[in-house]
Length: 288
Length: 144
Image (tube, rainbow over all chains, first blue to last red; front, side, top):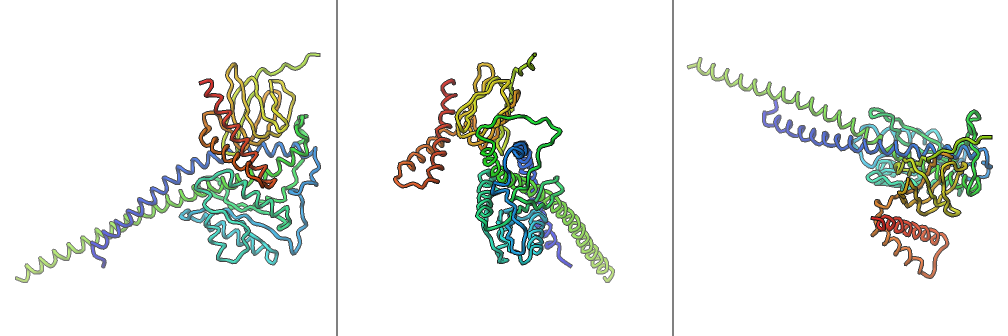
């Protein structure tokens, strides 16, 4: 039977752990709010870019642009998977889910070469040990998430695609569905999917273009890739904070349960020892 | 044949990937297109334009607001203007000291004898951005 002192010590240590998890939960929830605002803030930008692209799509020659070039899927077609995970742990199954999905992607495309672009310390550390070809790595990006980061990643991906080093580029990240739910998404980034012609029901607006539609199209397409990546980064950041918040919330709760059961046990031990002492006194008195 | 009545105001929406900078009713807007500045009044023909580095201003009554913007896209409709750009800063958001430092850095780089063409373009844009920022920042200081 553990002594009272030991139990007290354990309760104290669980309590301080609980304080830490509680604090982390608070931090995560305030960061989550900011991250959520940023996700929402980026939406109009993405929506409008998409609108412009599809309104241009019918006016320009889509086959000409290198970012739209579909290459037939063969046994040797190479792909680049950009894996977006967190820089830090302690956020439940957030990183694990991403790694699982990435491994599934690798097995699915077995024999066809896959290179990786890893974003976030956790995904870098995971794949570095596995001997997968890593084209680029970006770590420590989520502390201060900057839009320039998404441009860098986009430039790397577009270079690899246009130079022919890879035949397609996919993006793997956690989508922020709700605070309690994150969804792992694999999204095709390049080649950009053919844009559907604008809805024939909607009244088409006859624009003047400055410069020519083709030039605008060529300007907007890479921006579109950047925005897709930017959104993925923002989603992933929000999802990470949400995951950490729920993980820390349940950790705090578990610590509370543990403190309760330890306290109960400690009281039992204390009572048992008091009872024993009384019995000893009584039986000692009876012996006299 | 009666023409449809012209709208009296423009709704300006100015957004960057990070946040919405402005959402306002305005009377007039001037935008830095890649082929030169152009002004927009209510009732403008639909226009889609690529924007370069420069200063954008919008006027509401007698009040003009200046914004330094960097590369973007503008959609002009008779009653609304949507501007998407990489960055957009109002005069009070500009760090003058930083812009000044950026300008000097860019100028120093331009003085170097050998320069690759791609570097030149980058430095040129950096210089333009810092100049625009300084210009926009000085606009309000003149008034205030």
